[in-house]
Image (cartoon, rainbow, N blue to C red; front, top):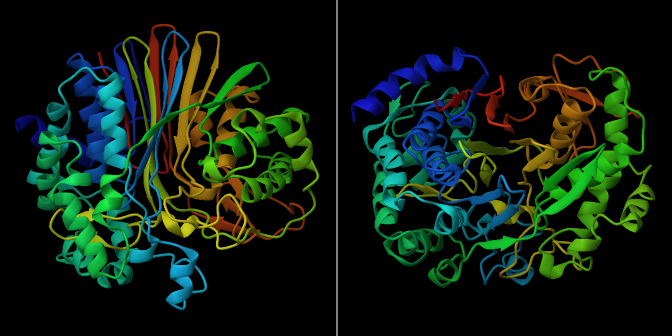
Length: 522
């Protein structure tokens, strides 16, 4: 208990610390300082990177519940020192009763962006448990204890959570569970905040990792969603299983690039990089020409994504053909059409973390509800805020991403690992549909502009907005006309984190745009 009281105090000032940490014993980079410290304590006590990632993921689910957690999804890329890379898909399926016919019967012309019909089966807990079951070494219940304590005794509210509650208060007020959880009373930044319901849920999960799918928590979630007008039921929850799959692999200027496969948009990162590799490198990383080139290759890559990527079971193109020369040529044929995409939002909230241990095992983990507070529904007993991932299905018939029952949507989440010789780097960010461009920026910052990881993720950035067709630009960049497209200023374009393993040295970096700090184990 004393340790967590100390960490409570630490988190008030740690946001002013450096954005880099390094050591031989392992590192953690994530968006919440307390979660970084929890992860490093696991490493320091003999746990591996997967053990630490379990504690980090669950702690983040408590500390930044608007970004991701028990009602959302989880993905991981795991890089072993011997060269093996594993991919874990913890995205949820649409409920078996959610269909285009159901929407039509309710008089709906589109999938609701929020509310009970925007919810898919939450994959977070099942995926984190499966990762531990296969690769963990420390007792499961012990790894969940830090998150339980934080939820039980309280934690200081980070400014991003306080800000999100203020911005989305009207959405939260519409749901009794969300109103009781986040608005009664509404916390201010750095005030202590308890989540007794989450503490209770974690106790159930310590005893039975599948409790959220088959126990009282599952029944409570299904009952509440039904009460609010949704179709997610206990049978949907019981049927859920995460999936191990094959990652995508490509190269860029002598580096090997690993990304997540469909149903994620990781392939779009690799398509952008393949197109960039054919072009010369612009001399200045913040030049208009650099971002013009990025936008020129991003637009057709996204358009190809929207026509061809979704649940792999519905795709006509096999995994091995996604990066073929024919596909790259097909993407080039889509250049010139600057109209925005049909689907929903662009920049949404997520949280990415990365962990490396003493032996060089790396975990790149990403979790999300999609929009801040997801569907806006929070089951009141266990305080599980549920995702709105179904909103990213298409209602256009005949596409791989067309809404159907028990189907995974095209998913904005992905993470990347890049390597050359003994140098391995895991990176990722929040950012929704901007993510492929963000990853391409980080990777080219490192490879083309020789930036260290902390500079690569902290340098100002800009990206094409696939919803509006405009260019989102951070204030520090002065971009001139890009393809005649309108620009608009954003305070931040996602929050990134990264870790690097080079020989015995481990290094972590966090983004100045967020409130996280990197922490190293001795």
